[in-house]
Length: 314
Image 1 (cartoon, helix red, strand yellow):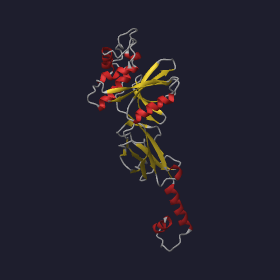
Image 2: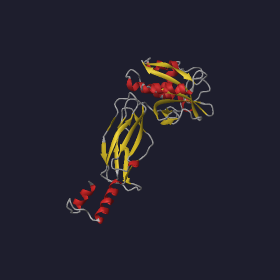
Image 3: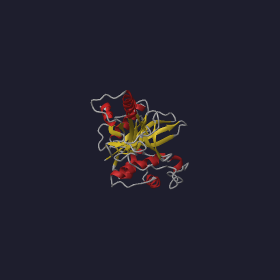
Image 4: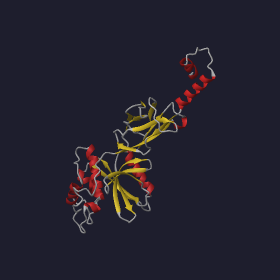
C-alpha cells in the first residue's frame, strides 16, 4: 500500500511500474516513517495519595538512536496493573499525540488501595523493541506528615519523667501516633485533629505514657474517645518472623489502614514510623525523623523492622 501511495505522490499511473529511483525513494519513506522510539522520562515510581491524580506520566517519541523529537505521533495509555480489589482508578486521557517536543503525557487517578498501579504507554508506529514503556505509580494514605524536630514542638519536653528528653530527641513514637490519629480524623468527624504538642500533653494527662515516657500502645484509642480500636502489637521473636510482620502490614494496607512500624537502628536505638502504602518491595512511610515520605526497606540492617502496632476504626 505504501508503494501505491508513493506512485500517486510522484504523479505515476496506478498501472505504471516505478523506476529504480522511485523504488529507493519509497523504501526511504518506509524506513524513516517507522524508525521511532518511545522513551519514558523516568522509571522512578510516582507516589500520590489514594483517590487522587499522580504527577504527569511523560513519554517522548524520538527518531530511533537520537534525541530528536517527533511530533504528531499517537501514543496509547492503558492501566496495565492494579491491586486486586482496588476501586476508583482511571486515566485523565486514554491516548495522546506527541507535541513539538515529542512529548505525550497522561495522569493516573489512583484507586482506593495504597499499593502499586501500572500504566503502559504504547506507540504503534515505533520500532517493536522500543514501542512501549510502563510506569509504576504507588498510592499512599492521606494523613499529616509531621516531623518531630519541628520548631512548633521540637523543644517541648516529652512526658514528665527523668531524664527529660525533648520531642525532637525521642518523639518518633509520639509523632507517629499524631500522624495515625489525623488519618482517622480525616475519615471520622468525631475524632479531633491533633499535633505532637497537643498530643504530648494529652498523653501525659491521660496516663498514656508509662514511667519511662514510652507510649502505652493499647491506650492510644482513649485519645480518640475510643473511635479506633487497638488490634495488637507483635515483634520479631521466636514465635514471629519478620515475614509474618510483613504479612500483617500488607493485610492492613489492603484494608486501607496505616500501621505503626517499630524499627531498630544499627546503634540499637528504637525508631517508629507510620506505614501508609506499599511501593514494589518497599513501604511508603512517614518518617518523623525527617518529616518526609520515604520508601522503607524493612530488611535494611541500618533500620531493620522489629515490630508493628495495629489499629482499626470502630
